[in-house]
Structure formats: structure tokens, C-alpha cells
Length: 309
Length: 244
View 1 (cartoon, helix red, strand yellow):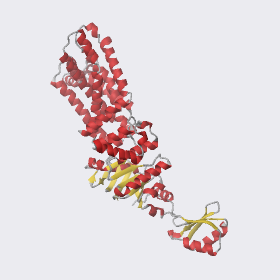
View 2 (cartoon, helix red, strand yellow):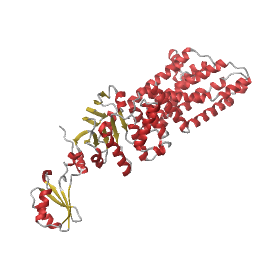
View 3 (tube, chains in turn blue, yellow):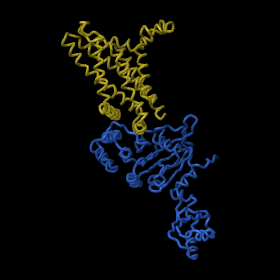
View 4 (cartoon, helix red, strand yellow):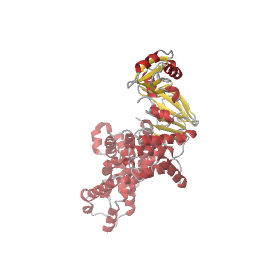
């Protein structure tokens, strides 16, 4: 549905996006990650036809954004970073304007506006000028705008930025509910969000793709993947037992009598650990297997010096 | 066309959603009154025409029109709404024309609200109403020309103050280009054909006839060309500079 074909963008001497290629199929929710300034927003701006690529191109539903930008814009719902909207318009007038621009009139427009309002829970603020809306309502109005024409492709630049935990949850539910029928790209800094809604994650750093995997696959790169976290009142004894195991790479203390045993090469060590501890008759109050931490992987990948070929 | 109308309606509504419309109209009418009656000596002239009224329009528009046009694009660029505008299925041309027409129609409303002066002159005497209508049209065309210049300048910057100052300066050149002062300053450079050429490009040159009620086809073409040229440049500027 979305094809990014060797896209690059330079601003004078600065290369913001450097030869990025990937595809997003219908049904996929792609989490687009990267530190600030990595080129996430620039890439999204090129896909949506706001910025012309310096080289390469993007295609949406087969339409080339350089040759047929209007066809692309018709098929894309886009929430720009910061959800910019005209401050003096009321929420209702804004959605009515979007409906007209999208070519809907009469009863069709009304139904679509009503649906968008219901999905983003905006009913209470319709008559308010946008400048008086809270950050959360603004973000939701931006989402309503992007959803109004039920597009095949959704591109959301930080859709949950500035929302409270409940609103974040609602927006994620909304994205999940649409996941099956659309190709969705969301950019975010919140890694738990990637685990919550994305079927795939791309990490970019300094304009290049440095990882492209499922969230679980990314987490598996973590040093903590398949590691075992234990709570005990006899840490010294447990530590000795753990250290004797062949597949345990390291044992670290995490305070409060908690110990972490890292797995060698990410192998599953839980059976080995639990058997050994039972045999040693160690007192264990809690034991959990870790999946790995995305934030750790993210930090490791994005701070590593880019390997130039 | 549908899209131009949609943009036009949004822009028009935004004038009246903010104090911009009311402030502009009140100031425009007040200044027109002051100019006509105190500076233009409307009564003392003792003539049943509106020359005293129209002759000040170039100077009024010189700063009022840039005040109206400065926000057209600079504000969209500063607040980032240009990113929304340009990622909707709208072309730069539709946006430029829709915005321009809304600003122009708004100026037309302000101009139409000067109708009491027309009633006054008809009450006091027996003016040539055809000539007055022609002068109104000419004034509207001139406003359109200034608006196109201002809209283009507004697309070049994120800063509304800069947009205002540059647009006012450009409009001043357009007005004063053919005047003796400018030609004297240019001296040797602007002699003979050059002087004639500059004079022929000056707004004053084209408006002075119109304000007397003589609408020459060439004057209408001049203003139409001015509008088209700057709207074209506006589209180019938007396409090039939108994200800068």
C-alpha cells in the first residue's frame, strides 16, 4: 500500500533522510521510531506530499507522490506533527471544511463528520474555537480530520503526544480497531506504544534505517531478553547458584534483594534456573522471565556509530 | 473550482471570526471620511463628483492592503497549518486563488460600505453615476493588484511584520514609479523611453484615469496582468518555500 523507494532529503549541506526504502502493506501498523531529528517527520512529510524528496520517491496505492500528488493526498489521512489547525475556527466548522475539501456534501458529509466525532469523542467541544481547546482535544480533532474520509493509508506523526494516560489508551484502541483495513504509519517516542499497537517497528537514526523488525523481535535483541528476575531474602546463596549455571551470562543485583540473571545468547534459561534453585532449596519470593526492554535496544541501536558501507 | 470555493468560504469566515474584519472596515471607512472631507476638500470643491474620495485610495491601500495581506501565508507558515493545507487534496493554485479572492471580496465589502458618500453626492448634486461606478471598479482593481503583491510577499516569510513592510514598500514603488520625484531621483538613468516605461507601469498612471470615471481597456488589462503575475509568483513561492 505504501512503498518508499530510496527516498532522500537534503536541506543544504544537511542530509535529513538518507536513502530510506520500506513498504507497508494493508493490515500493518508500522511504528516509526528514532531520536529527535532522525528524519521521522521529514520522511512522513515526503510521503504525504508536503516536501518534495531530493531523490527517490514514495508511492501510495500505486500513485507516485511526485507525479500524482493529489491522488496520493486523497488516499492518505495525515496528522502532522503538533496537529496544526486554524485557531479561529470552531471544531465543527473545521471538520465541515475538511469534509468539503474531501469532496463530501449533504447527508454523506454529516454522517462522516458524526462518525469521526464519535470515534474521537469530540462531541462536547464542537462549538469551541480550536485555540481554546486543550492539547488532548486538539490532538483528537487532528485525528478526526485524518479519519474523516476513511482513508486506505493513515500517517500519524506522534498521535498520542500530550495526551493523558486514558486518552492515550483510547487513541491506541482507535488505531488498533482500524489496523485490519488500513496501512498505518505512526511515529512515536513512546516505546510501550509500539508494543501496544504496532505489528512492526522501524528505527531510524541520522536519516538511515537501523532496524526493521517486529516489536518482539526488537525486544529480543535486548541483553535482558529471556533473562530471569528474582526476588529473594538470601541473595548471596541464590547468586552462587545462578553463577554456577552454564547458560547464565551474568548475575547483577538490582537492589531490594532482587537479582537478575542474564541469558547467554538470549537462550531460554528459566527451566535451568528454576530446577537449580529448587535443588538448592533456595527461598524465592518472586520469579519472572523478561522479554527484553525496547528502550534499552532503542538506546543501543540509535547511539551506535552508523556503520557506513 | 469547488475547491477554490471551499477555500474561499473558510478564509472569508475567518475574517469575521476574528476582530480583523471589523477593525479593518472601521479604520478604512474612517480614513476615507477624513481624507475626503478634510484633505480632499469635498465641499469646497463644489463639484458633484467623487474625485476627492477616489484620489486618496492609492495612498490608503498602500498600508491598509498590506495589513490585510500580511497574514495570508506568513501566518500559515508560522503556525504550521500550511502543512495541513498542502497535504489535503488541494493544489497550491487553488489555495492561492481561494485566499486571494476571499481577501479581495472582503476589500470589496469594505469598499461597498463607503456607499453613504455616494448617497451624499447624489443628494447634494447631480453626479455622473456611471463615472462613479467605473471609479469604484477601478479602485477595486487597484486593491486587487496590491493584494496580489501582498499575498506573494506574505508567502516569502513567516514573519507578518516583514511581510507588511516589504509589501507596503513594493506597493509604494508601484504607486510612485511614474511620479516626478522618483524620475528626478533616477535622473539620467530614467530619461526618455525608460521614464515613459516606468510611468506606464505605475499604478497612479492607470488609476488617475479610472478615478475620473474613464475606464480604458488598457488600464483594466494592466491591473489584471498585475494580479495574474503576482498570483503566479505566489504559487511558485508556496511550492518552493512551504517548508523552509
